[in-house]
Length: 179
Image 1: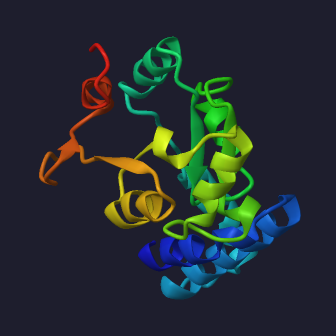
Image 2: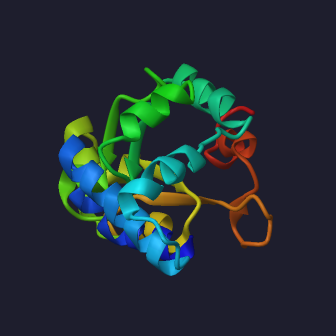
């Protein structure tokens, strides 16, 4: 599975429409079938792979997003993801909570490259000095955001990373807003 996930992360920038997403998913399934030495094709394994990938929102996500929006903040997603992000966000109950969604696939490059962040800033019409990016990866999220001129907050649910928040309920306090 780790080989499949690495392949996806490396190549998700190519999955900018339904056809290219289907091709990437088939590549991932074929890679997994080979890695597991299964006597099945990638096409045969693909339904099992896609059925096995299930996303769940953390319990603090929706309340935090709603609180930030109620405070007047404009929200955007900048993600190393493919064309399916909008649908995944909708299934998780996040529809209408983000003004824009920028994926690696939509801009052709993944974070930590600053381009996805800059595209989001351009679409929002906002100066980077007035934005904060919140993410869970010190390299792709924090270093990437800072390379684009944004402030950044690391979410580390283990509580081990210094200068991070453990969950999104602490985000409002970190941003200097009422809790």
